[in-house]
Length: 253
Ligand code: V0D
Image 1 (tube, rainbow, N blue to C red):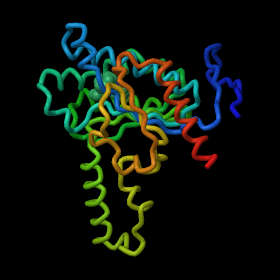
Image 2: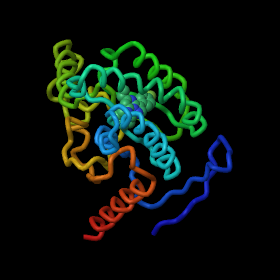
Image 3: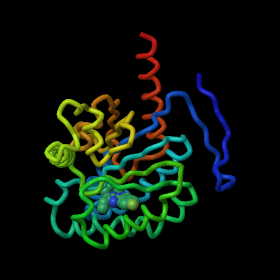
Image 4: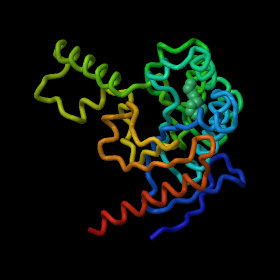
């Protein structure tokens, strides 16, 4: 049975009305695909779609806050994205600063904590510094955790985890007998995070594209043809509703 629970967060605004429904996923991962196509459909350059994608991000973050989702992990830039034309890569890597300049105060007002996963060290300084500033600035917030996957690739993450783990074995900090799934996952970028309950991919493709391969082992998948800039509260709520139905069905068998 679902029930609405009014709730005011510590920022006490009229808008900060939260409600919970049974079986709301705690952790949602999203592949935000379809930005380039959104622009092309309008006869505009691809980068216009990426920029339009920014407003969809903040919109969905706010809906997630409202639904009391605990973690939102967004695939913003993959290690494969470097293969795109230089000008597009450069444009995309300037988006975090642009996004945060506009929306960081709003995210802080919503008690959001920003985190990043991926190979952050190998990003341009302007990208890394903008993201690091946001992480530092939101460190003490205890509302929604918004994890940005930046320069992220899952196979790279797994291989890197394995290397660090082997180093610990060689230094006798870990023995092979005590190695299990739980210990291994501590070497991943997502160490300490819960695994996603629901994966959403917009833009019509039905694949993982090297996103969270280990972490998605038991996750429910939900795909939509809607392009990311058009993704709205309505589709997000639809995904949550289908997730709740699936959980209820399994529970009944
Ligand atoms: C482009 C659509 C938000 C997908 C959304 C550099 C691709 C817009 C961020 C963001 C991107 C990054 C860091 C942060 C807060 C937000 C972002 C990138 C691309 C990759 F702390 N949108 N966004 N980062 N796109």
